[in-house]
Image (cartoon, rainbow over all chains, first blue to last red):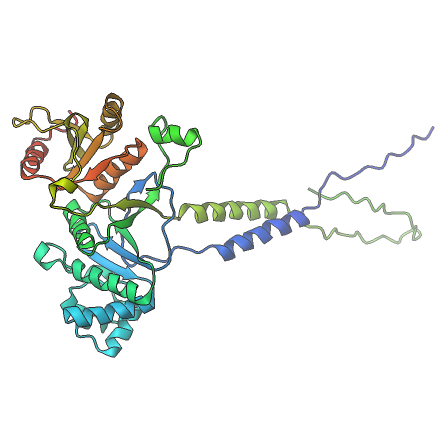
Length: 221
Length: 181
């Protein structure tokens, strides 16, 4: 007696569609990812529980390296041009129009104002942060950060942009160099700023952790 | 995963001696490729979220010389942290004793316990933590100390310059390496 033939079905699934999806997602992520550009100034930031993302536009970034050198970077070219004018007018930076053009292109500034002109002659890609002396902040009498901040504040109000002061310090930077910058900020009536940190989890069992658990958000003061 | 050839050969007899050429399947197994795709996706997802730097807000008070504008703080509610070398923290409650007998030492990792203890034993409106970083303290210590304030939900705290007496005490204690013991 002939048994009825049962059609044997293959268990293999066609993977082509899944492969398409995977690579579509992959290409999406590759194209939308912005890799961190190589930092000209090497700073290792401390961590904090703060989860607020740092602002990205019109940023005035003040960096302190581990040996205490101070650098300033600005991202808005219009503001930079205005800062150069201010430094010319108030601090005798003596920048020519071509220097100002170079000033606008520069990624960071880390020299005493008197040397600014000569440093601006060096092309941006050849300029190494380590070779610069940093903005002098050591003593209150010669704290050039005060002049820089005055110029930056004036430039922001002249261009009508909002000032965002970001502070980025190295783990090993000593407190006095930080304090000198705080003094410079206070002297220019800038009392609000943000410190760049790496995100870190909230330790369990602490008051903040309980607050998060109970669904309250931290008050923004 | 070899595909089953279900097309069923041998229906059309070509006659004796005529061999049918074996048809090789053109299908490629895509499973490893899918694996690879998803592996890369996971990698990219993780690297994009990890590199976001965060920022911690800090508002400074305006310096004022007028005593009536300065904040008064109750002695019983004050806890002062002095930051020294190598993540050492020295602390005292209330006023510093002239003989410095109420100055205790700790480290940044252990200070949380003290802050919590002080917070629990003090009415919230009196509690005030004063952070005084010394000359030898690092930026990391300052950020960590400020972070402790957020972690322990301290409403009132201040970053104050260290006084000469305290700076001297921190120096001496740092030199003797007494912290944390």
